[in-house]
Length: 329
View 1 (spheres, rainbow, N blue to C red):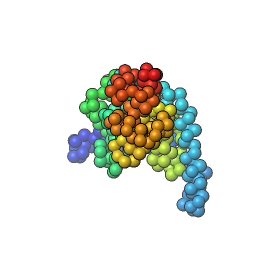
View 2 (spheres, one colour):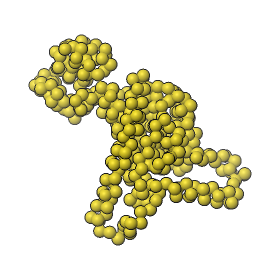
View 3 (cartoon, rainbow, N blue to C red):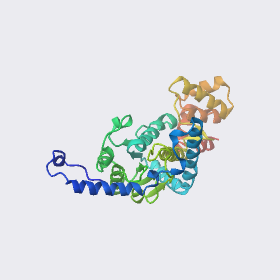
View 4 (cartoon, one colour):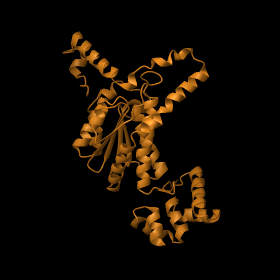
């Protein structure tokens, strides 16, 4: 359940909770944490600090191998989320991640990598983290307990029915995430929850709950480990697969990237050569005429169309290269 924010009156000491009330609140929180699979201790591993380093590596790797299977068990719900995200992207909507700590950083990372990978506008995929920009690098105390902060950020973004909001929380009970999901649903947005525990509070608060149960962490309670890995695998799927559905890849290759530096220019030319069989000089010339757009250059090389005709065909095809090739052929 969301935790009430401490009022200014309480901070000054006036009207502060009694010791008995504080003890009761602490006991309740301990009880909640004790019920979470991610907070359990795996006593079968014994004293890790006594193991040789190679045994530690093997033991940790064995735990990490459990994560892909746990993600696979949620395939149906991940597919449902991808379809919902894609539908809203096609209506001009956005994908907005929100989380605290590791979960927030996972969302910010995925959002930041979409523009260079898929040529998207930076506002198309957004990452919100409890505590703001400073929390990306350093812990911001109590930020995750603010059940109103995410709602305020979503309100500022003008979240509505064309958007998707994905709440990420290993425990599945983070107040920041719960508050954000509640606001998003009220605003009519499509909501998705990614948790590492079953029957989570955020799962109950979302249209699509993705609960990847990874079990006890290698270091008890350190949810940056298996839970964090599971979160990264799931958001990889949400963004990448929705972009594939939008036609931002062709035959498994990134075709909406922009050649903005030497490495990307070389990758772009290589992509043109691989997919079309064109000579390097022809690939370089097409890329230049296409203004650095790999997708446009591909269409020109596949069909022999001018940059203007190819651009018009791509626009008519909604940016889907395969459909544009068919139209010009």
